[in-house]
Structure formats: C-alpha cells, structure tokens
Length: 159
Image (cartoon, rainbow, N blue to C red):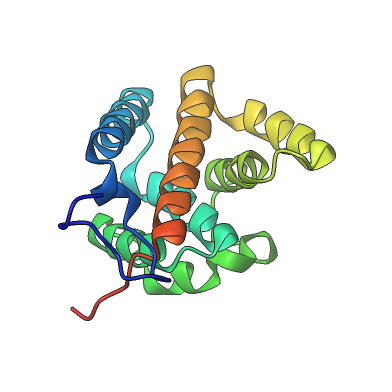
C-alpha cells in the first residue's frame, strides 16, 4: 500500500484512491451509461431520481449528498426530493418516473422476483427498449458506486 492511501489500523481505505485504475474504469462505464441515458431521451431529473432512490435503499450518505445537489441543479424541487422515499404514496411523480423508480428498486433488490416482474412489466408499458435499458444501467451503476462509497466510508463534508 502506498503512503498516500494508507489508512490507520481500523480505518477504511478509500477504494477509489487505493486502486485508481479500477475506479477510473468505473467512471468511464458511468460516462457510457450517462451517454446511453441521454441518447435514449432520459432527462437529467429522472436519472437523478433513480440515483437518489437507489442510494436511499443502500443507505449511501455520500451518494445521497452528491445526487441531491445534482437533482436540484437539474431543476428538481425540494418537495419531491423530500417525499422520494415514499414515491408510491404520492401523485407527485409521473407514470414514467414511477416506472423508472420501480425498476431501479427491482435492480437494487433482484432477489425479490415478484417485485422485479411487476416493475419490469410496468416499465415496458411506459418506457421504450432504450429507455428501459438506460434506467437499469443507471441503477446498476449507482449501486456499484454506492458500494464503493459505503465500504470506503466516504465522508459527507460541509459546503
């Protein structure tokens, strides 16, 4: 381990700093996924809602911070962000957003086969193939980044 990334005994290493070539590959994959989402016509708010919902499910404070700020910059409202964890219980989200959120949850918890089948069927009704694929890839990507940040214990800093 190099001195630049060494962690005191008992503290977590930042996986992205310890193995930067793997992290850079992750970032490149995320850029490709973002491009696929843009090509499919997914708006930035929908993508950030997916990123946030997955990060909520995984309990990733770092990614919640990053993607809350990104969603606000994209034009999302604090009201909708405040109720995102209970999106099924409000009419504030469009059918397209609801389908994407259900699909993101099913991607995050793939062992729940019935929920996955329902989410996929709902998504097929409102998303075309490119959109559906982009939503799933977005959920897969944020799930991976959540794990890096959670296991590294990336801090949420002031500012």
